[in-house]
Image (cartoon, rainbow, N blue to C red; front, side, top):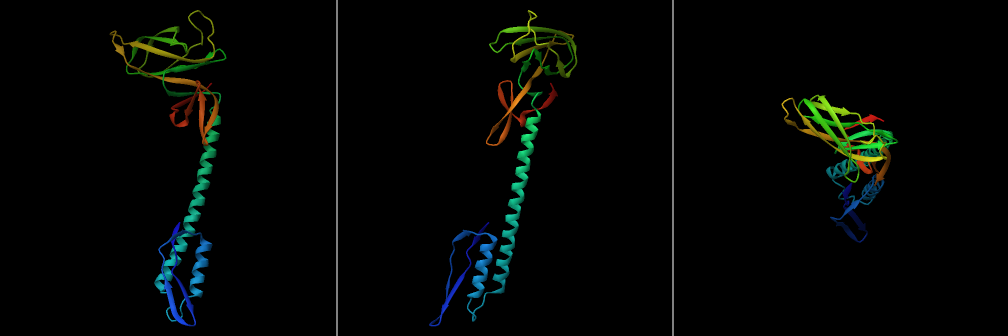
Length: 224
C-alpha cells in the first residue's frame, strides 16, 4: 500500500521550528509506518503539536495498511490452494477420455473411444466415416434409428478390413437423414484419451490426442 510521506519537523535552540513538506510516495509496511509516526511525535514542536485530526487520519492509514497486508497474504493462500487443486484435478483425468470441441476419436491399445455427436432431429439412417491421420478413409459405420440430441456410438477400433488400427487420433464425419430423406445437421465432438498432464507457467494442460487441452475446454469426461 503506498503511503504519502509524513510531514517531518526539525528544531534547534537558535531558531523556531522549521517545517518541511514532501509529496514523495513510499511503499511502507506497518512497522515502518509506526516508526515514522513515533519519530514525528517525539520531534514535534511543543508550541505547535500535531493536529489531532491529522494524527487520527494517520492511525487510520496504519490500520488500512495492516488490513491490506493481511488481505494480500490471504489471497496468496487462496491462489496457492486453487493452483494445487487444479493440478490435482488435472492428474485425475489421466486414463479417462474427455469430450472437447472437434471431430476426433482416440484409438489406444486396440480400443477406441466412442464417437459423440448431437443431432438436430431423429435420424432414420446415418453413415459415419472414419479417417486416419493422413486423411484416408479407413472405416464406415452404417447406423439407423438415432434420436435427436446427444448420441454416443461405439467403435471397435478396426478398419474396414477387420484389422485393428494403430494407436492415434482419428477424425470422422457423419451424414444423417430423417424419414423423408432430408439431411439432418450434426454437431460432432472429439472423444480423446488423456495420457498425461503438461504445465505452462504453472497452469495444467491435459495431453490428449497429441495436443495440449485446457481444462476449461473439457465439456465431458468418461472412464476409459
